[in-house]
Amino acid sequence: MGEKAVPSPRRRRVKRSCPSCGPEPGGEEKKGRGNPISVQVFPPELVEHIISFLPVRDVVALGQTCHYFHEVCDAEGVWRRICRRLSPRLREQGSGVRPWKRAAILNYTKGLYFQAFGGRRRCLSKSVAPLLAHGYRRFLPTKDHVFILDYAGTLFFLKNALVSSTLGQIQWKRACRYVVLCRGAKDFASDPRCDTVYRKYLYVLATREQPGVVGTTGSRACDCVEVYLQSSGQRVFKMTFHHSMSFKQIVLVGQETQRALLLLTEEGKIYSLVVNETQLDQPRSYTVQLALRKVSRCLPHLRVACMASNQSSTLYITDQGGVYFEVHTPGVYRDLFGTLQAFDPLDQQMPLALSLPAKILFCALGYNHLGLVDEFGRIFMQGNNRYGQLGTGDKMDRGEPTQVHYLQRPITLWCGLNHSLVLSQGSDFSKELLGCGCGAGGRLPGWPKGSASFVKLHVKVPLCACSLCSTRECLYMLSSHDIEHHPTYRDLPASRVVGTPEPSLGAGASQDAGGAAQACEEYLSQIHSCPTLQDRMEKMKEIVGWMPLMAAQKDFFWEALDMLQRAAAGVGPGLPTPES
Image 1 (cartoon, rainbow, N blue to C red):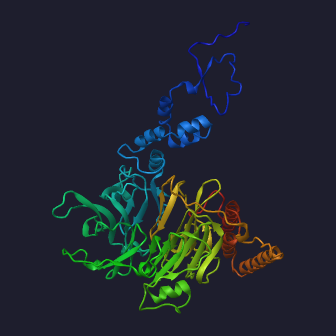
Image 2 (image 1 turned 45 degrees about the horizontal axis):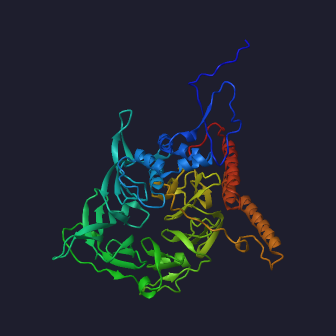
Image 3 (image 1 turned 45 degrees about the vertical axis):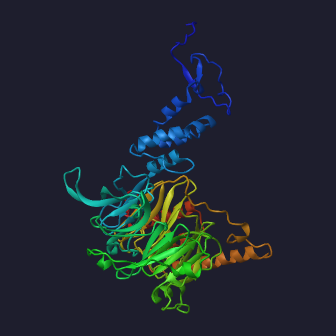
């Protein structure tokens, strides 16, 4: 009874000891625990090797415990082993300041998710993941399939096919098989219309080795555009450019018989050429003329950073954040600007400058409306608003960029035919998808009647979702996290924050309060004008989306209104509706 237990010499307790943190509290030897051993007595290579077997999520969590483990878990040796484990066929680590960590995280977070609008199943599904893919850079759904470009320049062809289920039934699945379409790709594009039925051909901007001229040895790398049939992946056309010209982006505009290809050079110049898509599948060769676009001829000092296009218009964003427009039809011009005063049908390529308060980072271009995001994370919408696709809370067209005050700092923005989507991130780093406009066909899950303001959609968003696209049948979301490329927003100066009184305006706060009271009175009158209780509930949901509330507060009100709506309809709390 009085004897002390003698610790076994084989029992050793490994102690985490960090020089910056000091010795572990209570580090002196305690009875029955043996002699502690610092983890630093092990060779660093051994510790890195052990840590590399942990899941990526655990490696990140372990690196946040102390300074020592932060340095070990952040070592390139650890991420090199993790990358080799995730992608055994990856031969090169890629580029960047932290190439192996970037490559490992790109391959850990890559994924393509989709949710069909019709049918009984309304859940998020994941496509097949090509083993050879080095992360996902961008994707494009076509009429029958999906194409994905990775960071190594490999373009993958994800096919829809009939497969056998676990129960032995034959069923049609999206993006369940894949093949490599081509390598050395820089960018790709197809018909810019929202309806994938029109996307018959895929235009791929790539780099190919060409044999040298007569009398010289070796070969030269030349950029080219290859055209593939989206249905089979067969190449039907190819055009090669001079080796002195290097391009980085391609977009399409115009009809099939007069399809214009716009090519953006590394120097920020725009070149264009015209092809007839109806003759691409004919076995013959012909010469096309590559010409400098008018935006680069008339404004030679501009350096274009990126382009966006639809069937009848093109948008250019310069490296200084300026925005220039080309509109080719009077109907779209009227929808975008509310007038035909400056439209010239004889000079449709004349660029029009948009007046904006700050530098624009990225944009989204729909058929007759557009969205812009500036350096402060503010969202500006412009164009046709017949279905409420601008998210301004009403259905009045906007002939100039109009700020959506209750949304800020989006991850990405997408504009379709008559609805818009915004991917945003909460304070806890969770993602949510917001939408507005027409809800017909299930394109706004949970809001079949649509909404004139951005509302939270009933979609489970992947943690690392970075881009999205919506078609008539399906909603697609691409998951990928690049540690070196993400939008960095600036803080808006206090004098420019909406609702903040200027120093010279003493009555600014009272004017803002008066405007809020007037808006609340207008909301009450709108609710009072609704004929039924269900209509009042739906209107109240829209009003919650309009009000400048925090995301958590909006979610609370929307969930509470859903509960009241189900109770009024006689649906118990344990029996959620299919949309929920």
